Image (cartoon, rainbow, N blue to C red; front, side, top):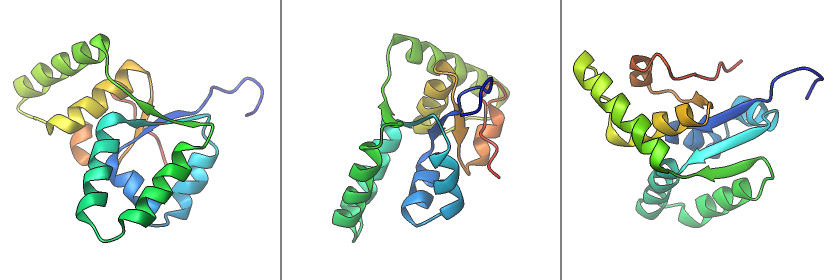
Length: 137
């Protein structure tokens, strides 16, 4: 990291973690330059469900295990503050008529609570203006 620059701290959505496991070299390079890469608990659960329902469970479990062994990667869990963020977002989006799937609300709440930039392909996160998004090269 360069002197005086801010640390790069991101959270990964399920679709981008899937992209990583499918060999997205640009994403892998970007994540390699991040100071912190967080995987929200719900992303871990969605990935595991995909592993159990898929045909490459052993391969995918190995990829996930390797990723989680990296010093800069960790799982992000909920707490009381996350629940507050979730509840506020739920009401905000419902009132605006732009609901977001529950699992994605948890992801947004965690990213906001921890001031992380979210890496995702899902456009419905655009309905959450206070959520920072990572700008991928």
